[in-house]
Length: 401
Image 1 (cartoon, rainbow, N blue to C red):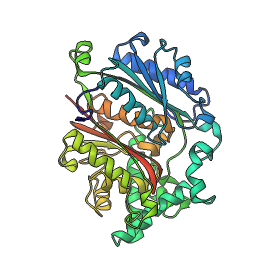
Image 2: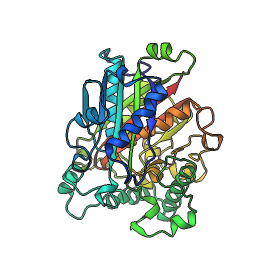
Image 3: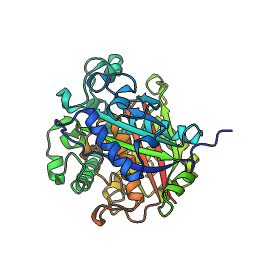
Image 4: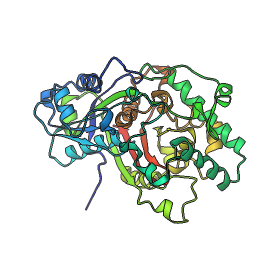
């Protein structure tokens, strides 16, 4: 009988580059930096790695197909390298592959690494390519990501009978909060705090989403080295262990777009992955037990509805929680303590691992006091790929022992 991943795998070391306009570096260069830092953190050498999983989404503008790009650029020691892709959950998918490889007993130590180079494409948003645009063929030539996600806002307002001004006020706070956090983070792409007045007055992209409600494009890489708790205790006998408590991914069957059960005000795959993750991790009341979150804030409305899809806020209660500071850095469940996609941008293959990197270091108490979450026990990461009515969502939970 399946028992899940809980407490079978822990993170031995992690690395993360600065995200941004990395014109000076190739995708391979970024991966080298991330791996070097992960190995140093783990206290290992490359010869200790037994397998690797590479997360990258857009092969046309990055590395081509397969895992050989990572094997060659990182000079890995002739180990198996598997390239994985699952839309915006590609980085988390790489972590899941490495974690399952260790949990199965096939490997003692495995690497998960994610990378993407998007600034080179010249697009202001995600590239209009066959790799990312396949859903747009179904939706039509005029479909855009901001336009599709903006519909979450109108559907949410209609479902809970809220004036759009109230929704706009809440998503403005969402963006403001993340920029406050990102301004303190040296790895973030955007490090300038903005006022709520600036956010409210920014150019409209797709009503009610303005410029600051949309995440940007960037380059970056992040890496994790995982092993069993038993091996970790031998290698780091005096250190606390950050363990994977749950790793769940839900992929849409398309039923949201085909039937009338879906109200358009939330994301079914997120709700499903969250329910399974809480069961796997043994979490009964996520609002009280989850200490902090990194969620997929591709747009500020996405973060708002995700707070309810994850069961942290009650149905219709996210605007009140947001405006009351519940998700601020000094709130009860800080969300995006590193600045999120709003401040890092979204190099697709790296984002999921970047989120885990933040939870890992917060759980170990490594950050300066002005950006540290107080006494965290469980950290949650969430990715949402594709579009609201046909997508992939991942939910991962980590804890420290």
